[in-house]
Image (cartoon, rainbow, N blue to C red; front, side, top):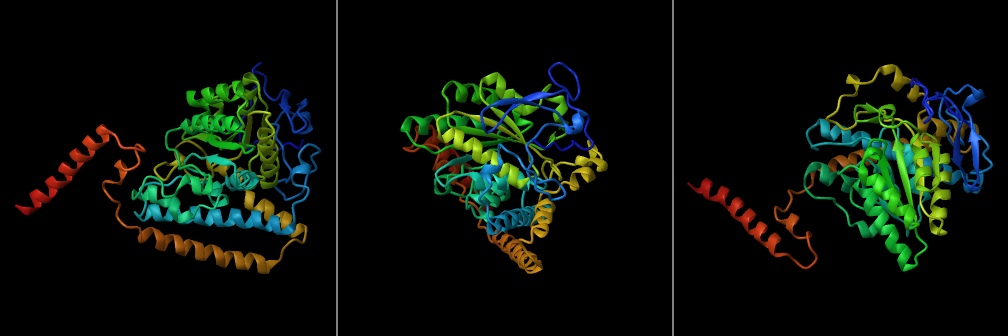
Length: 402
């Protein structure tokens, strides 16, 4: 296992309160082993890494098999996914600043965690996202423009979850883990060999919903992967103020494996998620994956991160940029050329332009659409609320007529 230091962060403390001591982690073989940080100095977290920040391939006996057959075309595909996802994200941020969106939650810096895990899923797997999984949505075939309707206020989701097995974005923090667990319990009872993956952040790990999900999934051996993107900051609260142990170690208390992966390493995220999903499909129950990454931008466009963290921290993480890391590897391995990057740059600009045009062309919402999908067969209370709302809307027309 290769270890990368947690730049500009204080050493983590174990339950015993000692910084940098060894800890247990459960790997792909199902065995437990004790690992230490780089050179035994205890300066950073233990994590699975296949690509260093310099773009050098690192051998890993437990997870290499899950990416052993990856081709140069697939590597370029992962790079393309990350570049286009970042371009879309930047366009959405700009649109919010221009007043076209009410709010936006950027994924800047988390592209590898999302693309790696997203590409590990099968078509028949089901994904439960939060509100920041734009890269996973890309992998599941959701049109990026459809992600923006909710943030523009013209719909309550923008896509049919069953078309891509990708649930609607969830704003309530942590609640989607319960939805994922229930869905996983259902497909297990149906005898399907598909799996479920639920995304949440380090902040959501403090929610009771997540703890309940862990309990139910463990007791019922549900085929679910809990994918926590630990981006170091729950809005303005650092992870150190939320947990006494690394997040992945929490899984031990519930009786299933937890593993921490370098969230800026797309290959490692791909490999670890493949392993976890295979466990789920094989009836081995849940897994907690902690993707150790960093939120490069604000929590949302209403947030100002300069109020609670310093520039030196961001600069340290910029050196671990997930896109630059894979580019260095592609170039060093002679898997691409400048023509590929030039074409991708042009494609990203085309995507940005298409998203801008799509957002500005979105029609005003149907005021009564919110009542249509509350219940499958209708409900008396919803009918009453619809009538009240219709009367309220009509009152404006009456006032305008005087």
